[in-house]
Length: 529
Image (cartoon, rainbow, N blue to C red; front, top):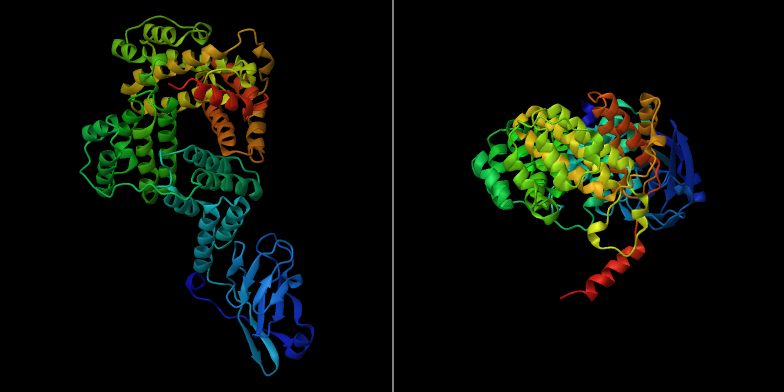
């Protein structure tokens, strides 16, 4: 363990001092490393020749006293300490001694523990302005010093926890899925690193701005009823205080997950995100252990208290009465086709009529959600003069699939919550049905070999090319959700799911509606009361 905490000397004789003083600088290659020597006037200095920014040769740089500036992008370094004066990453410098007119340099590697600490520090600095390439380099440095991506992620979660005003974002489910993809499907170190950097970078992107929103430090004894009452009252401090009590008592997510699931499904909340986030939060905690529980669960509870409650708006006003009417005695056998064209009210009514066969109802709703995606009217992406309520796009349809996947996982464990879950799936189906074109020939998106298609889809995720995390995250989570759902899907639903994923991954997607935003802004102001 000496390498962890204690440096081991490795002094090398690099030659006569007069030769260096005559040239002012000298490049040496030792053990596969390039060492740049400079006679600074303040003493001989030695550093790695590769600039920590993009690897250009520092031997070509400009010296002013003990300051070295790379001529490519003007990163500057203090050659005495390695501190970065302009730029980001520290420069690797080496101790130098002059002995009897000769130059000796200690090329010993820094202790692994120190290298890991430095790498995490540089990663946090990179997070502040989402310097993506620097995040990647920091992770590579950390892993080269025997750090693991799990350790880096645990630190990232701590760093990010109180930086989200409204709680958990898509970064949490994306992280769980990126790491699963890296672990189960990456074919080499490059793909593994690509997935891991995406997981970390998403947290940094969502936290841009530098503000913090601290959680209460108050601790109250864990009580399920009081916790749920605080969520219902949208009282973040009270809910967090109860969560703090659970964590202080040594309770893990598995001990309170049923209560968390009740909270997530207590409303049609955040267009289903509450349940999606909960499911993936559980995966992260299961992977990282108790050290991550607070950093994952506090933002999640904040999200529960701040999420919009769509069941309280007119479009979904029939959800509450439908839930009250649920008796589990409905015996109708539903078809996917009948559900996919139903309004919200009709979808809720049909779900109640089939409430006696939960598995069959789930399959029908899942299939209807997939069929809706296959029939999405792409022309709606390009409409300009329309109200904000009709701003619908591909992600509205993928949410119906990933929400279904999340509720199946949660309600399989807690079956008493199936009524809320299934009726909220019906809300998805009914809402999205208003934005489909039934004339679309979706059959052209059918997939002959689902296994081959899914393997290609997952391979494409490692180099997705999406500029914004929100889109890459949805490509990822929809692909993995569909793959997992296929394991239990009947042939008709499986056919629709794979076809829907195929269309989504390959259809043109408008990512920014410039003129629509301008029109809606002008229309809003013109009609203000």
